[in-house]
Length: 290
Image 1 (cartoon, rainbow, N blue to C red):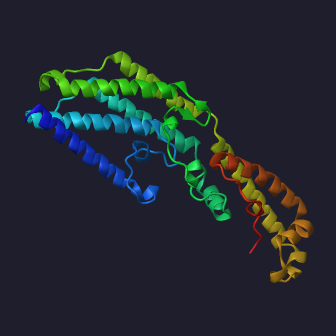
Image 2: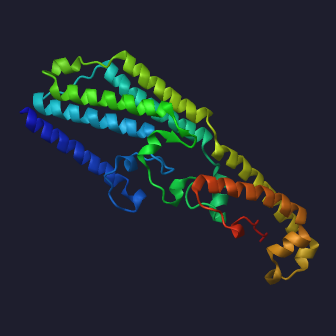
Image 3: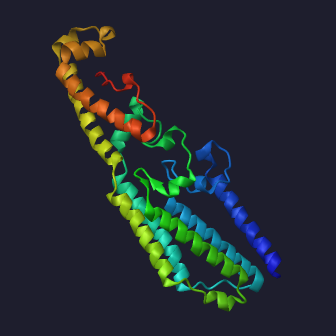
């Protein structure tokens, strides 16, 4: 098959797979197919994901080159170990980044359920929960601002990706392309950038972790408040239809109420910082016992 026709069919195949990926995430973004790659690879928080975008970027390039040479020569491409290592570094970075997110940037199931029931959040403790969409700057920045490690990872990935695509399209033969290798210095630079990226996740500020501990305390304080109210003789003498949070906080468990509200108010501020939406005052109040 001729080079132009092979290139056209390879490009059409990659576009088809890209469209399939876009349809695969449409339910997450209102049921509409999106062409924007950052939405395809976005983190669950709604932010653009550097590691997922890298893996997606290199995967599309490898697919195009493989299909191009399969159509051109009728043979599968043999990939040099350094090229495999490149994809391995990207996948490892994505995996380690996910481990970091799971171990540090998470709220326990009990705290999440409590916050949802209270109406503090809709889905997650992130701006993605209130409709924020991934942006290009998400690849270069974190909650702490611009990060050099992320910038390096994007820049070197772009350079290596362009080199792979160029050599894949212009190689004289399949044998020569199979011998094409990536200079070890570039692999080292990308590996270091990934290490800095993951290290930043592991050692950076962790407002979600702090919030999770705060929510543990709040739920305990709310339980204490509820027990004090529920076991109070004065409370039991009040008709159910007349019971209110005002009576509970002023006459039944004023000290427990103050302790709870001090912790809950601080946590509400933290949630505001995370999702960008202020928690309504009536949703900060403790629940009354059933």
